[in-house]
Length: 219
Length: 219
DNA sequence: TAGATTGTTAATCGATTAACAATC
DNA sequence: TAGATTGTTAATCGATTAACAATC
Image 1 (spheres, rainbow over the protein chains, first blue to last red):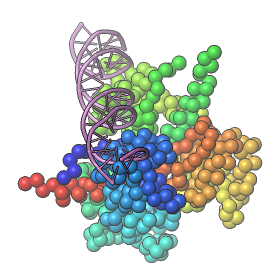
Image 2: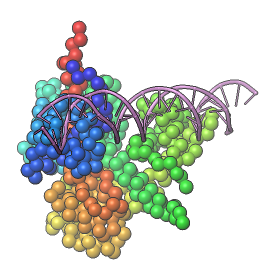
Image 3: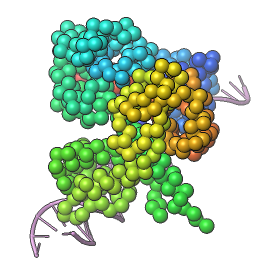
Image 4: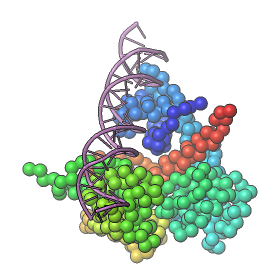
């Protein structure tokens, strides 16, 4: 029914709205206007109203938006109520960090299992999540519908693992390798966390802010 | 001298160009046209030429771009040749992962030290990086010029640490906490890696691609 | 009711794409 | 030289901002 295509920019702002709303709820705020929200998030009220209006009419004239309603709506929009099933492939330090500290359940995801080749951890559990041998992965996927696979493996095997799991029905890959995955299945979604890209952007801005100070005496 | 402001979109594409160029160099490609590069990266040739022309004239008519030249230019633009000094605050699993696997030096950064409160690791080294007690951090900053601090601490102390290090002259913060840092110093740059934002965007697209299939029988 | 604030349409601004003369 | 491809200017497209009638 909802026709108009929603832009990437809008979508990537949604989690940030949700974080802010959680913070507001935590502080006992129960409603907020687009004006005040804009002030707190450094966005224009127009943009906020435009963004929300892509998904429905969540506000009330003269009053603003109920924090609870908006949180709930955003959770739904972001798929947090679908309890997607997740597996974690590669249990190195990063994998450990994700199991122990990320808290998939906080966002409505079910972390079913982790996979690795390190015999020392296979058969154990971390935070209640069992670790299986990677050679049982294909079997696991055939018996358990997995929506999302978190890819935290060494770069050199990233593409072969990605291809295999895509063929086994995984619908989305959360990719922590610094490889640009080449998956032939067009319906498999990939979301990248490229650490190096992010750090280099910071480095660019650092280089350029100092450059600005140095290059522009302008007197 | 270079006047025109360079947009965020352009800047965030630069690391991706660099990764692709590294891959091309690895495979022995020594020059490439914007047309071919565009094909391989799913960008228009126009966009690629526009992007590069923000920073100079790196190509040659009739020939294209030298892979080596372009790599070198992008490295410079991204600040990789400034050997920025880096410290890592919070050596949990994520901190470990960054020290051991990220390879700051691969990008031209000098990782000086890590800081934590865990007595079990203080005084030890990981991959040649010494771990100090967090209560020596302020001192350290006064004696060593630190360009970038990687923030991998628990969310509840993120803001106080960020404020302290900003006051001690850190110029950029690479923030891995899911907190929106509130730093009063306007010249301190913050680059966020918000894991949850990224996963929720993937979840949005999953919810919506399936929704599309379900909601649009259209017969 | 009067004031506040929404949802939406119109106006502006910026980013991407197309076109083409310059040139290797 | 002829063909290829750049750097850049102009045209198009899309996203952000402003304005305002509708309404709580």
